[in-house]
Amino acid sequence: MGHLSTHVLDTANGKPARGIAIELFAIEGEKRRSILQTTTNADGRTDAPLMINEAFHTGTYELVFAVGAYFRALGTATADPPFLDVVPIRFTIAEPDGHYHVPLLVSPWSYSTYRGS
Image (tube, rainbow, N blue to C red; front, side, top):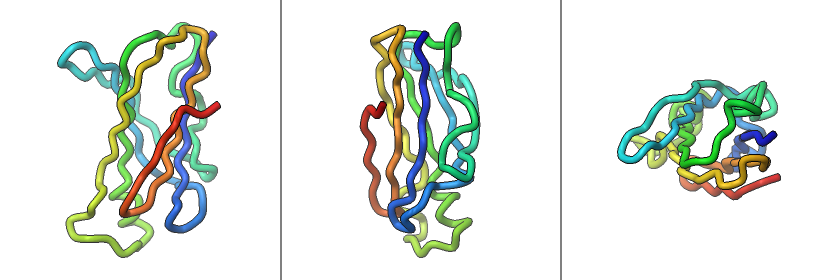
């Protein structure tokens, strides 16, 4: 069965981003339905896959990462208000048996993502 995972790397400080709040939404037409809320662990990952087995479905999803709160908690110098506060990543799952890994590489000023393995 397929599954969805993520992790966050803090490229400004060169380490995994611990304590970032993440919310996963299913996108259904113009509506966003919250599926789960979680937080990254010491390795910048979630303790469990975001979706797995019966909960894993094809469709459009959005991961929302609260990076502004993370950098504020670290005391990292940012703009006020921060340039990046909440980072949404919208993506589509097309393979019902696939492994979708959606990492976020982030600093207070930029971010990048890709489909990982």
